[in-house]
Amino acid sequence: MSFPLRTWRIAPVLAVVTAAACSRDGVTSPAAPDFAARLGTSSAAMASTGKAQFHPNSRRYADTEAKPATGRSGAATLVARALLNKDGSVDLEATTGGSLDGAAARPGTITRTQVKYLLGANDTESVFTQNNNKVDEKGYVKYSYPHAVRGAFMRVQANIKDIDPKRTDVVTVLEKIKLRPDLKVTSVSAPQQARRNTEVVISAVVSEGNGDVGATGSCVLAVDGTEADRIDGQWVNNGGTVSCLFQHTFTTTGTKQLAVRSTGSVPADFDASNNVATAEINIVEANVAVSGQAQVYQERYEYTYASSSAHGYNSIAGGSPIQWYYEYAQNYGNIAVTGALPADAPSYLSTTTASVTITGESGASVSADLQLLSHGWICSYAQAANGVFAQYCDYSQFGFVQPLQYHIQHYAYDAIYYSQSYNATWDVAAGQYVHTIPAETWGHGTVAGDLGSSVTIDARLTIGSTTYRANPTVALTPFSHGGGQPYACYNTEGYVYDNSNNQVYGPMTYCQGWKHKATGRSGDMTF
Image 1: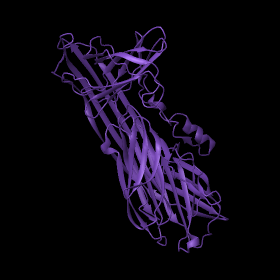
Image 2 (image 1 turned 180 degrees about the vertical axis):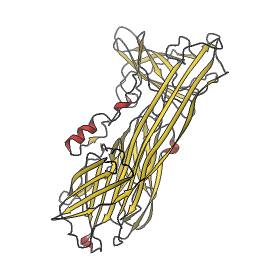
Image 3 (image 1 turned 135 degrees about the horizontal axis):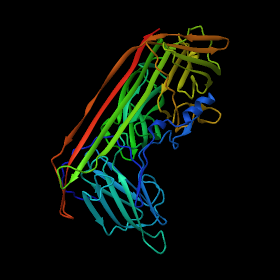
Image 4 (image 1 turned 180 degrees about the horizontal axis):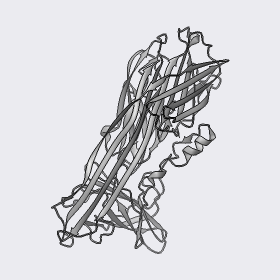
């Protein structure tokens, strides 16, 4: 249902809003999220065990999003959420159940609603009021409005019957308008070259860019336009970044087009234009030699935003300022080494041990000891809790010049998701695929400290009584980029006319400023 509003001129406030807790006259709004606790405690718990601990996708790795407003009267509850769309319109939903997105029971009947649009949480006068006196919806209503401002408020009052047997409950909530979640696929990573009929790990980075509300969706890999693998039920926390890990076997040679898409966002996505990223991989015959290569990338991203606004009623000045401030910093990195073992190395064994130590010039390090378990026809692999991954493939049974290949990598993000076919093992006796890591799970990656001007990768594979070692030192080149807008204040000259009470409101003064900066080091080499 939509409600035509009169047009008013209010400059958009681009703040990343954290909802402030308030309670006044029985009205509640969500508490401010604790951004300092975004990673939670599960990553520390995993690191202390020394073993990978995986979780179903239904369990969120972190949850700091701005929550919907909730109110209660008697036995009746009302939950309301207002999400701002890219075109400036806003969708307001309210339910008597516990979830706005799921299929949870929605008891009772909403018979009447009143919606007021307020520029401030403490305002007594509304920009507009909408009364809906004949609703009779079974526990859920949705309204759409053409114009709104992020950080403004909607006061929702609903009459709810059929919950308390002898009365109709009246519940009021105050909901701050939030941006819809914006899931974006920022990159796809794959080896430049891989062998035909071998398992290749492909990764993608998905982030939520608007910072208010997280979302659940699917991460889908397509090869040459055809879906090849997928992750369902993937949660991305507000302002968060996660990895999608896929595993795919290419059966033909040539250059393959890879695309990873984020789909099925719940709540619906803010901007569908940034939901896909692409890459290429060259698939060659299995007897093509692969030289060793090491790649290192480490980045710290910092973002700060501050704004405030003040408005007057029937006057040029006055009113109380509304203030927002938001900042976050994020570290992530990716370190990888790939190569071929000597032709005279022992052939495939059922178990192989691997270790990797990544040490920066500054002393910062990440390390892991792994046992590679045989899980397929050609390749075995292991994944540590801190994001270290190792893969070891044996092609000796095919008579190749370089029979033994290895790939060791360190992923470091908020969370790493695993697809339906990741680590899929064909069990001949059972006649089916078995997953050592269950589908729809995730694990944390641990970010190393500042590596300095170089990093040394000490990767070792022990096969039988022999240890094979890759020990490249990669020189790192610093990079830095960023931008922003200095904090400044502006005055609007527009006004709002409310025909319900013949009042004129305005003008508004607003101030805002923001800055972002990405710094880090990167490098690669062939050894």
